[in-house]
Amino acid sequence: MKPRPAFRLWPAALLLATVVVAEAALTPGGTAYTKRYKTTLLAEPSPMASPTGELAFGRQLKIVEMKGNWLRVSDGPTGGWVFAGSLTDSKPAETKGADGNVLLASATTATAANRPLSEEANAYAARRNLGSARVDLDWLQAQCKGVTAADVDAFLKAQKKGEYQ
Image 1 (cartoon, rainbow, N blue to C red):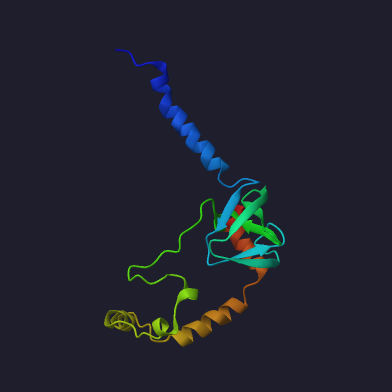
Image 2 (cartoon, rainbow, N blue to C red):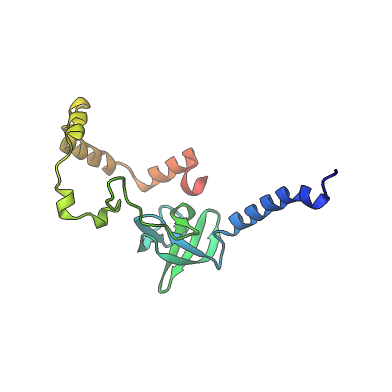
């Protein structure tokens, strides 16, 4: 028995429908949600632009305009540009870790934060010689002071990261 032409076309139709839905996910006039703990709105579509505001995790936004991988979004009175990688087309859920605690640092209590490390964590730190965190942090902050916005932009271009993908 020969397959009917309609049955042979269903895989192609399914693939086409999937591509159309994926393409329509983040489009002007559509809705997006922030997927980072804190999403910074920028004055223009550039990683070095001045910030115009901040949005919390899971905030619903209206997509006003697109320029490459950048989206101009609006949250009522607040608006600005966001890199597309910071948004999702569906509302993200606040997940919990294996121990049942919320993963967002903003939801951590003082009691949980003051809990001592496990014996395993202390043993790992000792094996890896990780007892000098303060000195390491001071060194890192000193190194960061020497990095300029132009250095970051040049790195992003050379590595084809962020808006230069």
